[in-house]
Image 1 (cartoon, rainbow, N blue to C red):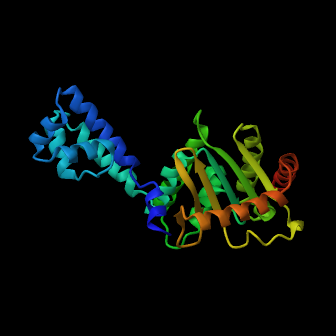
Image 2 (image 1 turned 135 degrees about the vertical axis):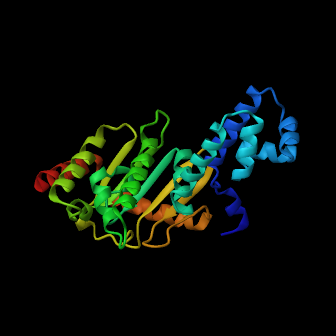
Image 3 (image 1 turned 45 degrees about the vertical axis):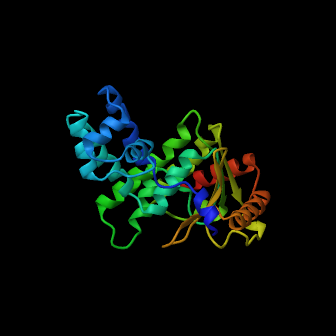
Length: 277
């Protein structure tokens, strides 16, 4: 990846933006200018400006001093701790994916093994997370909660459109219990009514090997470069490298082109749901 491409990729700053915006509101409410707060904290005006824009992280000492100077009564410090915890919940690559999903207008995903995370039910996700060696019940529940929170972006009025192609084997691969699978299939059927979600099934008889290398997500939007999230067991990554994104797009087009129509996919999912019952 070139340095230019790396500069195009969104940085992990969403929690910082939230804290910075709140600090700015407290500063304005206190009748202080940036240079006044800078003088009170012993920092430069440029640092105050960068923190308020979310371009620079604030450490705990800075947040505590700002809380005191702005007479926020502990609220600003509490917000810093909350947003810092939020940023630390996921690995960096996953946190970046979540942030990019928030900016994207279009998500196109391929999944050869499991239902895409954005379309999973809590019980289906729970069964998957339980499969990680050495995991604990508390970690499983936090992972499930995080996954459900990621799905919230699809319910926003201006949320992204999601086109998902899944392998037919996903419909018949046992995850959890028969009841879990029946509920998950019913959920996919219900999603057919969602105006921005389109689910297609790649049938077994397609004989297509294009997607056997692994799952991926293509992300695009008017205020971001086209990007690809490439999934593996231990090292998933996000890239804006033009060649890799183009290759991933080509794979998606082949998979989507050989997939069943939306109506035929829905019928197959409905039939599979009945079998799981």
